[in-house]
Image (cartoon, rainbow over all chains, first blue to last red; front, side, top):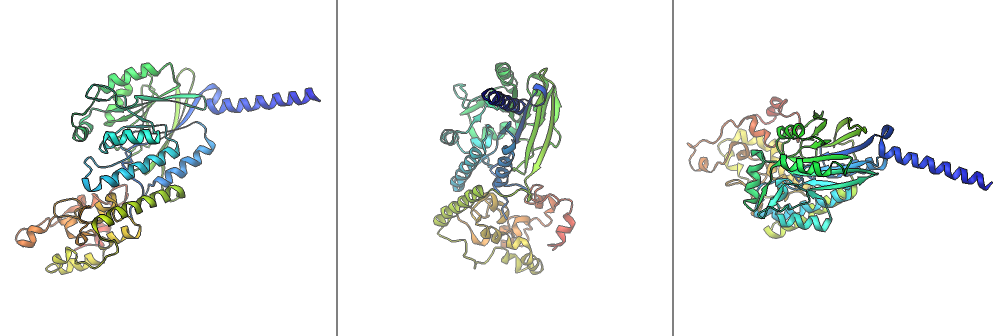
Length: 49
Length: 398
C-alpha cells in the first residue's frame, strides 16, 4: 500500500514538474514570453468629458 | 474614445491570471506630456505622475525607459519616486556632467525561469534632442545610442534568454539599431508616435510600437527556439468599453481629481459652481449675432460644464480643449481661472480678438479651417473627425 502511494506521489510530482517546464518553455524546449508594451502615454489618465 | 488607466489595470490583471510569462514595459514619456510645465500646474503634474507610478507599480511594471518628458518633472523628482515606489526606470545612455549614468542601464528579470534583459535608450535624433536640451540644458547629456546598445547587448547576451531594448527616438533609428546590432530580440519604440499593427522585422529583431495616449495595449507573444529562430504574434488591444474599469484605480483617479480641485479652489478663491459670468464671446455677439446664436446652441458652449460634471475642471490636460486659448496670450490660465474664458469660444478658432475689439478694421482669422479643429478633435479623441468633417461642420456652420 505504502509503495503504491509513494509511486502515486512520484507520478503527481512528475506531472507537476512537466506543467511547470512547459509553462516556462513554450513548445518543445522553446522559450516563450508575452511582452505587454506601451509608449507615449504622456500622463494620460482617462477621457476628459 | 479609447484609453484609461483603469482599463489597462483590468486587462493586465486578468491576463496575468492565466499567463505566467508576462513582461510589462513602457518605452518612456509615460508620466507627463508637457515639455515646459508651467509654474501654475507643477503641483498637478507631480501629483499625476505619482499616481501613474503607483498604479504601474500595482500592475507590476518590469521596466520604464526614461523619456525627456519624465525629465521635465525634474530629475530629483524622478529619482525620488524611483526610490519611494521602487519602480525600475532604465536608461543606458543618459549621463550627468561627470559622464556618470543617472539611471540603471538595464534590468534583468527572471520570469518563470526565463531571464529577460531590458535596456533603456535615449535617442539622438533632432526630434528628441531639441526638447531634451530645452528641458535639461547642459546638466545631462546622451551617449551615442549605437555604441551604448552594442556594449549592453554584449554584456547581456550570455546572461539572458531575451534582450529587449526600450528606445526613445525616431522610428528610422530603430531600424538602424536592429540592422547593425546582432542579438536584440525586440525593440519597443517610443517618442515617435507611429502605431504599428504589424511589427517590423530586421535582422531577427522585432520592432513594435503602440501609438500614443495609452489607447492601445501592445501584446507581443514571442517564442524562441534553441537555435535563436523566433516566431511572434502581435496584437494592439484597444482600451474601449468592452474592458471593465478597475474600480480601485478609478477611485484613485477620482481622489486625484478631488485633490487637484481642492488645490485650485483654495488658490483661486473660487468654486467651480459659480456660473453667472459674461463670456468673452458675448462681445463678439454684439455684431455677429447670427454666429453667436449658433455657437450658444453648440457643444462648444457647454465644454466647460462637461468638466465640472466629472470634476476635472482644474485638470490642465482637459482644460486645453475645454477653455478658450488655454495658457496663450489673453487666454484662460490655470493661475487666474478666468471664468469669462471658459468653454470653446469664438477666439479658440478665430484667434485673439483684442485688437479686433479695439479696431474692427483689424480682422482676426476668418476661416481657421480643419487644421484648427484637429488640434482638439485629434485622431485619438475623435477617430473619424477628419473623414466626417463636412458633417461635423454643418452642426456649427456660421
